[in-house]
Image (cartoon, rainbow, N blue to C red; front, side, top):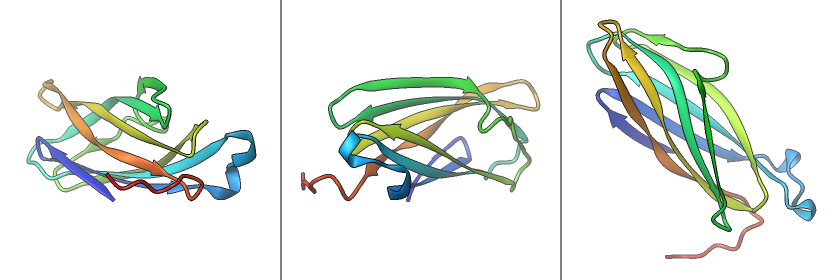
Length: 130
């Protein structure tokens, strides 16, 4: 699991390779990732939009921007959490994702919350130690 906290908003990500939806012979690899967003602070916040940068093993990058997550713009009061699962395909057996959420407080202040970089690994990629 990967975890990062920005301004009392903790983001935890757990990626999972989906063998049954992947087709290595066709260079098609699919991952799901579970995200937990926890409000550890004292003010109510709303997730307004998301940004992802997805990079495959060949260095090809795609950027994804959009409102909310999985069709929602969750409001998190102090102590509350929101969880969702999404996914991404790649043309290579590994990659990396990183991003941010645009949040807004009840008082109207906007701020960015970092999503930790996380590795997309499959059993179809040779393990390399750095």
